[in-house]
Length: 115
Length: 110
Image 1 (cartoon, rainbow over the protein chains, first blue to last red):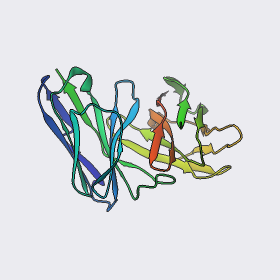
Image 2 (image 1 turned 180 degrees about the vertical axis):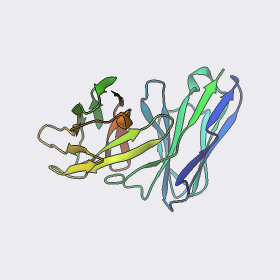
Image 3 (image 1 turned 90 degrees about the horizontal axis):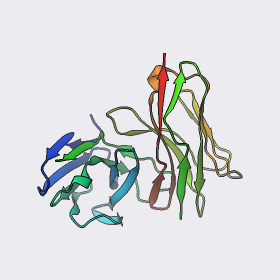
């Protein structure tokens, strides 16, 4: 069983469209994250939820809206997609929210291409 | 604020060569340190970690020692294999945040 699964794996869409990426973890973890990885492999935290509550909200455009219906799911909705949104988006989870000594489990990524 | 700096790549080595990827950090408290590896087309996986000064993390022949005096956590392997080709990320965690380095791409040629 995949521990952290995200769908779709590939997403190709036109500028201006609205799209969603879904993430689910079956590890029983309390905390989930969204990271963005650019073409140079730089990894940047976007959001983090602990037990469905937002705990990290980095400076990202408000076109990006995370939604956590329960602690096993953290979806990412993106409105009015722009060319610069093209990247690989990774979902991750960890047992708790106190990050020191925590281990992150990553999904396999969603490659978003905006045309 | 906290940050991680790792050597820029790409790094290309012949099989069985010695590998070092440098990583230094800046932290306000007592972070845990990690190396993550990303194989092509996959998400990041934990390679090894160390939670306090002088701890040595090791896995799959890779090692890194938490050096508080030099604020470093360099990754080493004595003899690399083609299957080690991947992108390696140094990271630290403190309180509610993870900080990743920029990644170092390693290619091992037969």
